Image (cartoon, rainbow, N blue to C red; front, side, top):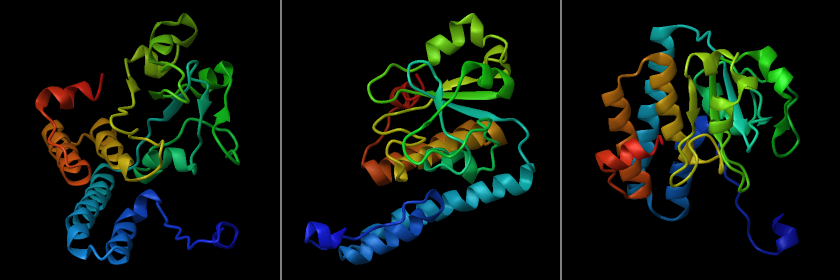
Length: 216
């Protein structure tokens, strides 16, 4: 790539479980080691938190389906960079499709009915509307466990998505949020960590109203 562009190129591994290393590297690269320390320490806290939750709780049995696009029929299986938030917390991915070479995998409604996910997480994609309303009101989805038990959630997207788009550090609040949904992480602790993330990485102090609006 560097040869084609005729400029130096640095590739950084942004896998969700290696983000602390990425920030250590970036701090050294830009001569900002001191500035990177609180970011790295926070990420290590989150890694420790997720490991503690998994060890204390035991295996998660409930499955999750990531629904993208206006119809909710684009998705990503386990092992995709778009669902690393689920993989990190060992949450079973309901989507049993091949790992796409690029973009997202197409699913049929009949497949989703057979998978019968316990949780559904919806997100808009490429300007399309979010499928949340369709999934929660369309009778064709009504027999699915997640819909019957009111476990359909919009993935927060401000200022960037908590699951992906882009698949970078913006996913860390998604990991914390899933910890509350699947592992019973106390809501006050969840809010504390998410607000601290916004302070450190976005340099923004969320008000209580803004925090609640993230989930609407």
